[in-house]
Each structure stands twice: as structure tokens, then as C-alpha cells.
Image (cartoon, rainbow, N blue to C red; front, side, top):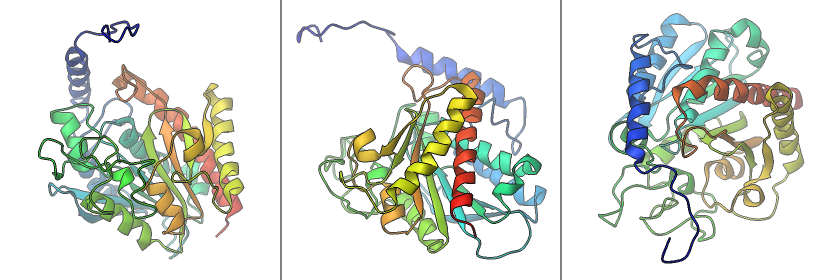
Length: 344
């Protein structure tokens, strides 16, 4: 930077001490409540801990919860999905499908997915209208290997852990690996060393295959697809690969508007919303475009949760409650609008 005469200021000399302090606080908080019980507002949990929690839910809510393994990660971690109903036994209801942790370092994403699960189960009386005519299908951790790697080795890892053609560069960006308008150089990269590496071909990652199969399993019932990411305070709509707008774009904007307005009234938090291409940047082969363009979702969206911590991806555990409670206000408002617009 000095050689290039770029003005700069050193904020922190050694980020590892910061990361270690966060890890210590997180481990201390997790000791308060033994797994499979989770205190979602007090700690970040590993993939295995999250799976143990999911597996405990059918015993607690036998009429309302099903847990299914939809596949395996590259390193053979089970990828599990929870389905939440109101227990009335009605089949083939429309579906709200939510995923988290497509990008490994975005720890607030699985926390948000877990908080949604707890709101639908533990706070059922307050939220039963969300389940009257819709089933909710939630996959808290898509990128299980990468997420585990952020807990054990590199906190800011983003991609999968499957080797690439370059032995020095590991992993693929799952959110550039979906087979709808895959392979554009504007919005993805053919270079395995880049964070937005798209893979050698669409769906060459087992994790993207599992999420694809999950979406297609609900083809014809998938009304709202929501992918939880961080950070940035965005509701990102298709398309990411082109400046053109999809059909029914204004209907999706109306759903996003409900979420944004609810958050403003709740906390004065400001969300920007619109097509990914315009609001953020071009993307090629992302999951929301696939959900709309191939899996036939009525509404498809990526939610970029608020920033926290030093780099935005690394909130302290003390930030969790504020981030997820505010975000739930938006998710709930959007769900109510989806249910209103598209009655079963």
C-alpha cells in the first residue's frame, strides 16, 4: 500500500488474537447448556451439534416435526433437513424452504435458521398462523465441511472443501455452482483460487446437489425460497446473471417491501432490496436464480443479514440476539405476505 501511495490505517495488527477471544467466549457459553439443547441466542454451534439438536426435535414434537437426511457433504457429513408442520396431517401443503450456511464463514446464518425453527416450535402459539396452510422446510447448514473448517482452522473460509484442479486452491463457491445460467464470467470465476470459483461444471459439489434435490423434491409446492447469508442488509431477488427482470418481479418486490418495512418499524434497521444484479453485483449460477428459473419457486430471495464483529462475518456471541430477533421480524412479515398473496 505504501509503494502504491494508498492512504491506509492499520486497525488491528493480528486478527488471530481477536478470533481466539471469540472462540473462547463461544466455548464458555456452550458449556451452560448440554447438547442436544441449544441456546441459540448465546452461542454459535458446530455442524454436529446442530444435527444433534435437529435429531432431538421429533421426540419433543412428534406430530409436528420430521427430520430427514438428504445427502452427504464431500467429507461425509450428513446434510439434514427439518420439516415443520402444524400437525393437522394435511398433505401437500405449499412450502416455505429456507437454507443457511451456503458460505462457511457466515455464522449468523445457521443461528438465524435455528432461531426460525425455535420460533415455529417453541413459540407456536404466537406463530401458528404461519403454519396453518404452509409447511416450513429448513436446512440450517448446507456447506457442512466449510463450516466445520471455520470452527477448527480458518474462521473466514467461504467455499467447500472439495479439492480442485489446482492443488494449492481448495473448494468451490456453492452459490456459483447451480445449473441455471452457470458459467458466465460476469458473476463467477473459472479460477479455483478465487472466492467465487464456480466449479468445473454445474453441480459438481455434493452440497449443491443436495440443495438442488431438495428444491426439486418440492417442485409444484415451493412457494417461497429464502437463502440466509451475511452480511449487508439486503433482500436480493433474481436475476443475478442478467440486468433483465423476471416475470412477477414486482410481486417479489412487494414481499421484500413487507420485510423491509417491518424491520424499519421494529428497529430502524434499513434494508435495500431489488434484483441481485442491480443491488449488489452480477452472480452466475446462484441458488435463488435456480429456485426461480428451474425449481419453479413463486418467490425466491437471498437475505443478507446484518454485519457484526470486525469483518462483518464474525459477530460476537453478544450480537446474536439483536441480529436474529430483528431479522425474524422481517422474515415473519414476508412469510405473512407470501401466505396472503398465495393462499393454499
